[in-house]
Each structure stands twice: as C-alpha cells, then as structure tokens.
Image (cartoon, rainbow, N blue to C red):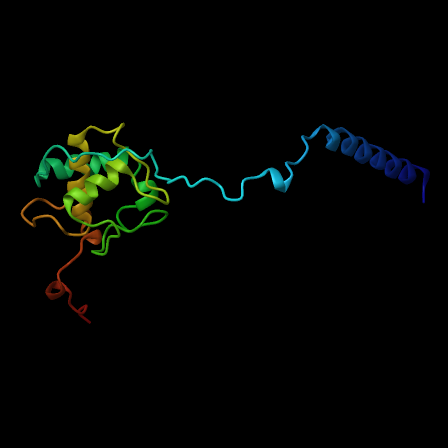
Amino acid sequence: MTLARILSLVSLVIIVGATLLYFRTERHDRPAAVPAAALPAKAPGVPLQPGGLKKVRVSGTYEETAANLSTGQTLYSAFNCVGCHQHGGGSIGPALMDGAWLYGSAPEDIYRSIAEGRPNGMPSFASHIPDSQIWQLVVYVRSLSASVSPTIQASRDDHMQKLPPQTLQEPAQ
C-alpha cells in the first residue's frame, strides 16, 4: 500500500472515531428505571374518546337542499374530511359511499359522529364547527351514499355517482 492510501485510511478511522465519540449516549445521565414492584398492578381505566367525553346535544335542523349540499361539499374539503375519507371511497377513515355504517347513517347519527367524534381516529368537531355547518356536512355525507332525495342536484362528478341497477348496461361492441 502506498503512503497516501495509508494516510487516507488513518484519517478516515480518526474521523469515524471522533464522530462516534461526539454522538455517543451517556447512559449514566439517564434516570433509573422504575422497579416493576412500584408500578400499579393494572393501569387505571381511561375511556378514550377523541375530543373528550363530552356528549353533544343534537341541535339545529336537517334540511336536504341543494344549497346545503353544495355548502357541505365545500366544507368537506375545507375541513379536510377528504384527508381520511377521500371523496367518499375511504382511506384512513371508513368509506362513506356504502350503506353499512358502524355508527348509523341517520342524519342524527352522522351529526353525532362529526360533533362528538368516534374512537379510533374520528376527532370531535363540536367546538370547531357551528351546528348549521355540521348539518350541511351531514347532507353532503349522506349524498355520498345516495341517501338524499334525488330531487336535489348531485354534488359529485358523474363518474362517482352511484347508479341504480337498471341504468347499468353492457357496453356496445
């Protein structure tokens, strides 16, 4: 080996050693672990509920109007419901386009889900969104599963709408 190669290897070892010394952890500075005997036998039960344990009284009125549906669609994006539920198809949160909903699909049930939150990730929005806007979100969310009156204008693109079985036809060949 040449002298230059030996010097570069030595300098590399010195640099690596100095880096390791600089970033090493001082174990003696850490607090001592709590002995297992000092821990309670069972952790105290804490009922977890996103947004707290506050039960929300359903107030306001549910009105299926085109204006409420349109505003609900805008709020759905503005409050980032799309982040978890996508455009109804679900992602992190459950899909909203089907009819099988864990906490119910009635307007009051959806209102409570938005206002109170649900375990496993749905936060409570009662302190952030006025009742009127929660109801507008309810109208839009129900429209995703075709649960609103067909007389109000649909709020989704045509490719996202749930079509009745008789409109589905085989493509022309």
